[in-house]
Image (cartoon, rainbow, N blue to C red):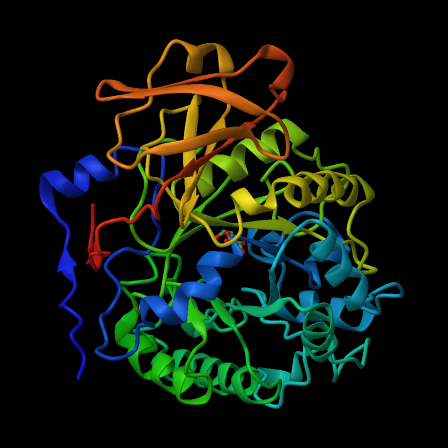
Length: 448
Ligand code: GLC
């Protein structure tokens, strides 16, 4: 018998106060479907994993003007379709992608299987007009190669799928051209089923674009897509697949998208920040896209981890399937940082201290708190909040012991300047017993 309490809806002033941050969740208010959402236990691997690689790669990578190029430049579908014969990537090597992700310290990958242009990167019988990589130029099933490469590298496998498809006039006029819109819907169901059945166990399904006619959001077009039905089918094949909220069903986690800085309180639900390693002007490859600095990257990661989120960092390989050199270089630097400081990230949860924006935040695991200090000068002016559990020892992660003072007024730590790190100084605080958060309350939001 399950003793689990019913989830509590967070609304009003409480929700407002919690979301007093730069975090902006997309697609709030999706349909609720009893029994479909994964339990905390089933989500644990995903929360422990913390960091994944997002990959946008497709026909748009040939043009190099962003994955929205077909729509933005009003390229007619027949014209755009010709790119499929040109798409013969010479250097595509899924094992190479997986090894780059692994070296960066990532634990999962999410590859775009089909974006809004409709081109499917796998052998897809359900693809409308055979618009897929097996039936055209490349004659390859890229998803198959990718899934195998992830598994060989020990990475969890994620797939991105866009239900909407610009090739269908019914997408733009769903009420007037309902038959055509239903054809698009059939393609979606058929293709999602292919992805959920042809490649073994899929760990993550990442939707984007369950809207219609670029109006409303993923939640207002449920009358056509019936995301409850769609995701029941998904979970009948892959019961434990972790699904994002962007199909119009509430999903298993929340999404914040884009390059904006992350501030505010700890978010007590599974959530993921997805952003580009480049300028963020395009998710697909564009030439000479400036890559974020190491400081920007690490700061972003830390700001998300201390607020209990995951990071899905996007790269756009070029038309040949090569991830730009500068991005690979940055990923390797991130990997070195993750490798050195991994114990303060993997398997941890955000807290117990509420972050102070741009100054510090913390993660914890059992009887250890990892304090991440981003601004030492400011930190020295502050006291950490008092805590009932006793601290036994503080060390700079991987280094020397440092002094501390714990009292009813709060906690101070003496960190000599020579032990600080330029971006993030991590202090490992060992407690005399396991720090336990109050039993997790099941909370959901339905809107701002
Ligand atoms: C935005 C972009 C889309 C991209 C997605 C990734 O919605 O418009 O092209 O795939 O972000 O989250």
